[in-house]
Amino acid sequence: MNILQETSPERVFTVGGTCGTEAAPVSYLNNRYDGDIAVIWFDAHADLNSPDTSPSGHFHGMVLRTLLGNGPDVFCENIDRPIISRQVFLAGVRDMDKVEKQYIESSNVTICEIGNDLINQIATSGFSKIYVHIDVDVINPDHFSDSLMPTQGGPSCEQLSECLSELVKRFDIVGVGIVEYCGRQSKSANQISRILIEGGIINDSF
Ligand SMILES: [Mn+2]
Image 1: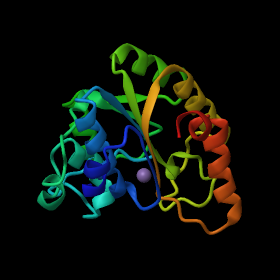
Image 2: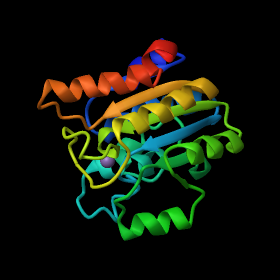
Image 3: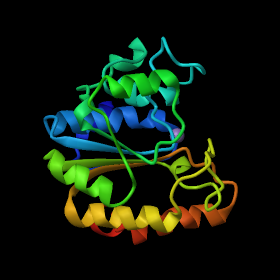
Image 4: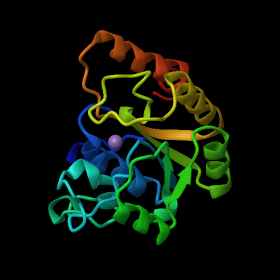
């Protein structure tokens, strides 16, 4: 976080770690662009537990809620500027706790289908900048096997890269985070680079 504030980059690309690594870049960019940023959360999970509701107590299941201003104090203290629920677009979510569903119903978080639905929702939301969070567990485990929390269902690698390339064409992507990858085979590292290259993320934006 200190490094981001000192160097003040216009765009941030992060690789690695768990979803917890997203706290610094998202809150930094939200502050830098004055809240004018849609946060697309490609993830099988909503990561919307709070310290009071989390069944596991793992921070990576609370990071989005922390970014929304309601997480463990030690992390919230370091959030530059919390996001508001209208900024959040969950894409590919399919494994949620009951309290997370209740939170979504009581907030302005949007759940989107990966593809045209997501593109249309972002287009009508009016945000001019986009942050793209990719937890690799969003990908169907039949197609990609090296995520930390494999979860049934979800898009193929091609469906994800097609959606990314549409986002790159239409919107200004200022941040990308790739997380929860546990590389056991070089095949999966190649799959990730192919998704980012075919999705146009690496060529055009970063
Ligand atoms: Mn996840």
